[in-house]
Image 1 (cartoon, rainbow, N blue to C red):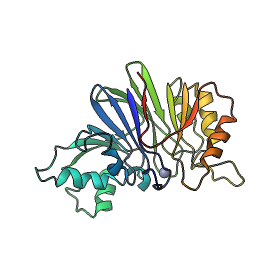
Image 2 (tube, helix red, strand yellow):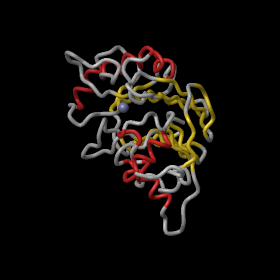
Image 3 (cartoon, rainbow, N blue to C red):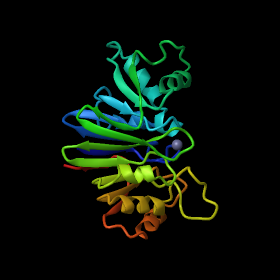
Length: 250
Ligand SMILES: [Zn+2]
């Protein structure tokens, strides 16, 4: 299983990174976790535009889903004809939200380009991946993920405040890809995002093998983000996600 960071900028794109998008590959199957603002551009550095087999959207905030509009154009209006539809898993209402985002009438909205499937908490097979989802703690319906293949596992926080469900998804995972939108300080908003310290606490509670901090907001100091996470007792390595970075999990 191979993970490639397509975009790791938090809440909006940064000068060097699109918003959230992660490519998971196994057995030649390519799955995108989130498709945030700007991701379709950078994606093409790593994989053919039409080589994606499935898309999972954690939630319907723009920085996690809006480049599905760009991908709709690329798949629908290719000079050689429309590309075959691929599955898009997302929260309830994803198909309508995406149709409205692009200004499409429903029907058909984007349903000729994408086969929309509604996520629910639980486990399902997507290509070669066993995919477990659970609700995490964010103002709109949001799913955290655990993807398993060949005895390896990656957990992804999506956007969340402190969440016991995230600890469950990350239990014993080889890698926890966890948002760290906030730095420690007074008057932190509740039930919205994690600080780097909280991300590390979740990784420690879960016994994850390693922690990669992501959803890095451009106005935060990255060295401080890493420093705050590193202040938490956690056995594994801690790093910051970087656009274009690939991790082979075996
Ligand atoms: Zn969000």
